[in-house]
Image 1: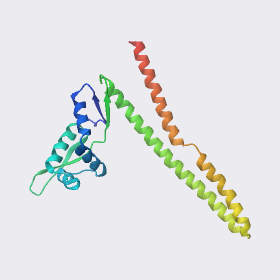
Image 2: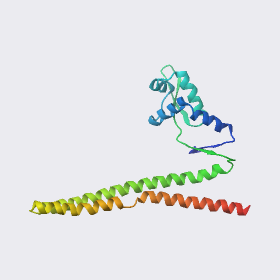
Image 3: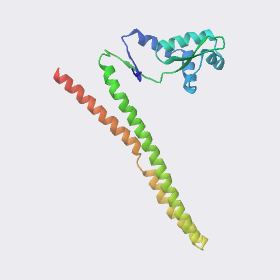
Image 4: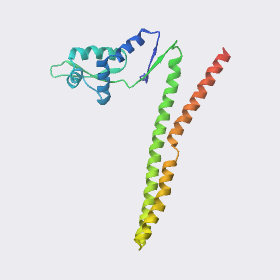
Length: 205
């Protein structure tokens, strides 16, 4: 079974209290920050890099693992045959619900992949738009350079270069952010859909 991409906790659950305690702990936050910059690490490595006693690291990692914030499913064996666990971030959305979470988990399983797709689509569109603009600008600059080289008078080159570059710069600055509007539009559509679904369920009940 695929691992869930989110950690759903109700305020009524004891787990919410434990999660709050873990996140408010300075050492736990340092460990999370270290694992953010490093794909995986052992307790000994974390202890040495952060200059924290090994016993303290072990205590905090145990709480981080039980809270679902880090993974401890990777290991190898040392030269002495001892099992050495490698820890990594779980990379999950942490969602705290104020009331009953029955049924909410299924809804989140549907909406989170859509949000991820919207974010990825926005990123691709943004990158494509940047490359297109850069290519367009380079093309125009090349045309301007060719024209300037063809002219014999240096006095005529400067006005020509200025006239060619200013419109293109203005176009680039004023061009709308397509990726941003794509994400906003998709998110707005999802919001309307779930509001309508909520209204429909109330009316049905």
